[in-house]
Length: 91
Image (cartoon, rainbow, N blue to C red; front, side, top):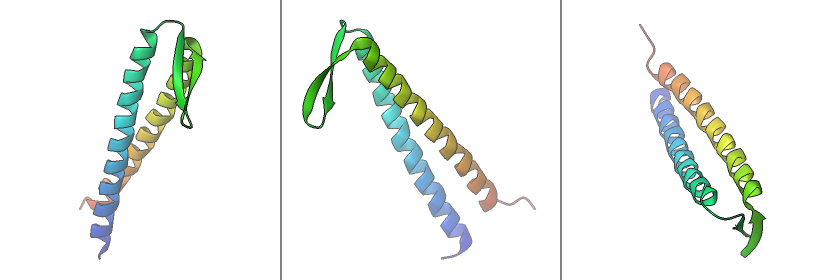
């Protein structure tokens, strides 16, 4: 396998990671909407058990998770861009 093929495979891996994170982010967005529309108490699935949480705490946790995913997506986009530039050197 040559260097160009290795770069292409790495780019494909990064794209797959980014897609997975984007899907997770969309799921968190949907969960946030559901929690916002709920009454003051929500339930979170933890280790096979439903645990009661306050709405505000649940929303805060969802926002933190969304922030982490957005950061990861941004990092992957930067890595992907660097690899694409490396695989297509300008003459």
